[in-house]
Image (cartoon, helix red, strand yellow):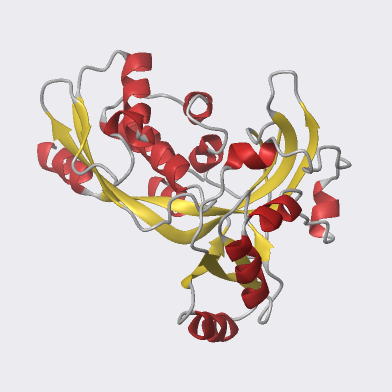
Length: 287
C-alpha cells in the first residue's frame, strides 16, 4: 500500500490549456466585475505538475517560475487554501513543467491551480467534493472552476456558472504573439462593448461566436492584429479571452499542420486538438 501511495505522488499531472470559443459581455455588476457569457473548450496542450511530499507542514515550489514571486504563484495559493480549509498539516513541494505561454489567455496559471486543488485533495485524502473544490477555486480566479469541472462548458456570471456542452473536437493552431495583454486595461477600456444581447447555447452552436474584447485588444496590440492577419490566411482566426493568443480551428490534421509549418518561421506556434473532457479529468476519471 505504501508503494502505491509513493507512486501516486511521483506521477505527472496535466494542467491543460483552454480556449474561449466565444465571449460576450452582457453587463457590469455593482462589484465592478462584468457579467458575461463564454464557452470553454480544452486543448491537449498542458503544463505538467509533480507533487513531492515535504516535511514540516511547508508548501513550496521546486523551482519558482521566472518573474512570479513564489508567494503569489497560484499553485502555492491553491495548496495553502486547501490546508486552510481542511486543517491538513502535510507539506508539499510542487514541480511545474511549464509548457503553456504565460499571459496568453490559455489559462495556464488557473489550470495549474485547479490541478493542485484536485490532485492534493486526492493525495492528502481530504475528501472534498468537486463542487466544494470549484467554490475554493473561484477564490483564486474566475477561470479556475472550469478546470476543476473538467468538461467543455457554457459559462455565465463572471464565468463560474457552468453547464456541460459538447462541441466538435477540431484541430487547432494557436499563435502566441510577442506581447502581453493587461486584462484589467481591456475590461476598463471606454470602448469595450458591455451591453451584448444575451444568447442561448443554440445561438452559439448556430454560429454566434463573437468575442466582445477583440476590437479593443487588436486596437491596442499591433502584434495581435498581425497574428490574426497571418492566421486568417489558413482559417478563420479568433482571439481567446482577452488574448494575447489567437487561434484557428481546422477539420483535418493535415490542414492544421500545413498552417503550423507555414507560420513557424515567424511566430511562436502550437498545434493542438480540441477536447471536451480535459486531460486531467480523464486521468482522474471524473466523468
